[in-house]
Length: 431
Ligand code: NAD
Image (tube, rainbow, N blue to C red; front, side, top):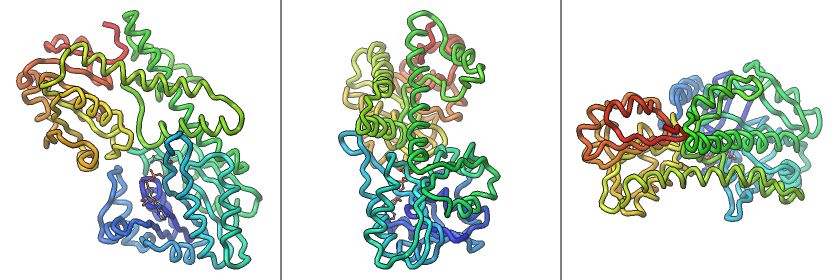
């Protein structure tokens, strides 16, 4: 099929490249002309495993191209996916101005029947508004269908998740676009859930809020583990073996972040409020998450006492492993808190340093993970990059002024760390 993707960010670029990979003819649109130029010149604006090869291959095969013109994208496609940002407003509700802008741009360019598919994460009932907007701004009486198709990919595993999804959710107002949507996703052989638009939109917020809830749940358990001498990893393993619960999203940490969970939680709380329900359960999920960061920071303060003039090495800046995304990253928040207390920071991340530079100033960015411990009073692990497990701890101990390690991701074994002579503080491990 001929497909346009409006918005070529983490979701849009992955969607475009993967649709091209399964045989569709894709045109990715972005209003950021510098990004379009970079892509046209063979560059990739984000780090995502496997993405660069996929983009190159499909550009070469003439199945994938880029433009800054929404009109061009719309005119040359049958199905138009919207993948623009839906950021939070100061009160936590969703800024839908990007969606509205794109709906108007699509309407202005429509020259025949089109399927307009929303992939951005939006509040329930947004599909109705998009349809209304297109109808209002459309110059001629062309036919169209609006579809909700929320995206569930995880950054860091985006290509894999997109090509092998647990399910594809398709929300429709009538049956007309269903066959075409099944054709779009057919080659993936994934389970397809066809439902109404409102349910599809709710599925996305309900799913993300549930995953955030699962993380906060284990983080709350981590408090009990610390107070009782239990080990949260053992507890997570024990409860996770229950098929009804599952082990994933049960890793205690300094809290979740990123461009999705915090914003989608706030949005869902606001959406519920508008619908007349006070979703206190989700407010508690947020509270636990903030508290978890506070607790971790307090561990550092309690151990180091005064931070002014202390040198701290930080491993990890991305909001999680396998990505260069630093939006709402707990690692960045932690760095800023440490800086506010007067600490001097030496930081390293395998992929996120370039993006971090724009928001984290006055720190020393080092080239390798082994350099980060040099001359430090303490080390902090803030992101769960698997490569950090390979840190040469003996060497780190020798080059640090004090062997103190705060592990916000439980990457190391407390007994082993003790044996190596570290003062080691992690999450939810009572000993
Ligand atoms: P992003 O910021 O990485 O990309 C959005 C892109 O849209 C940017 O390149 C921007 O320049 C472009 N854009 C903005 N307005 C435009 C316009 N009028 N015309 C053309 N392009 C425009 O955002 P993202 O992380 O890809 O997220 C997009 C949506 O997908 C959001 O609603 C998000 O909640 C949702 N989502 C994100 C993820 C994720 O892991 N990042 C996962 C699932 C869903």
